[in-house]
Image (cartoon, rainbow, N blue to C red; front, top):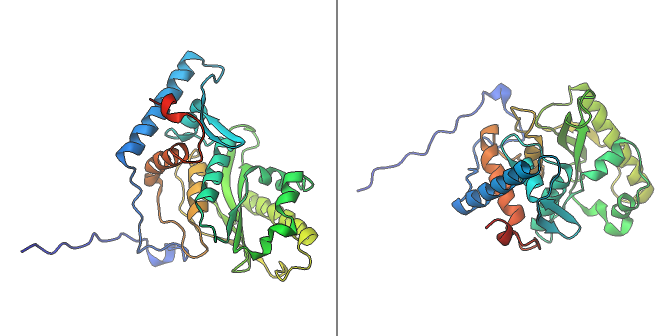
Length: 285
């Protein structure tokens, strides 16, 4: 006879602190496989070696190539190491990977992070941005359109005082959403930034989808309570994980303690990928 094995008790926050968007009964285990650990360790090692050999200039080779997107070993290592801040073009690779892994009939769209720079500055005449909003793309048939935002939240640090968060247009539930692992809409800078994104999106929508059945008139701005980071470096990993898992019902249930494993998983997914044309096996051997 086998003794009955009881399930581990799930520790939940008290009701007054629970987010309605997180399923506290389901905790995904973010454990990386041995092969992912080895690949990650090799990336970090090769990045460190290149930094020691050439401190001022990145001379490492490309380890990721997705069409027009590419990332060197050193850039990837510095972005995905412990407490590494994700570089913007590494973020673009992460977004590209999310889109490649969505099912063909998915109604979710994740836009490039570079669009947020244009939208925050109300520069809405860029060819690529306009091309994405063409009516032939039928954005009004999507359930959600996500915009990863890179915002400078510390004006005294124009290069390192940056933070990633997600601005989401939830067409299905008729609302604009902010998903921020550091702040809520009670924070003035987030509220101002979100309303700039909202105004830019409305302007683009009115220009290209004025006759659409989807009207934005009644869309309000809602804060989605998502898992929170415990340092200033992990926002990019949080934003990618949230963008990948948010389906407007339950936020991915993870914590800051899961981030080291998630960094390894993301590195493995991006490098060991059928769409990666870089000779990464030779580079990381």
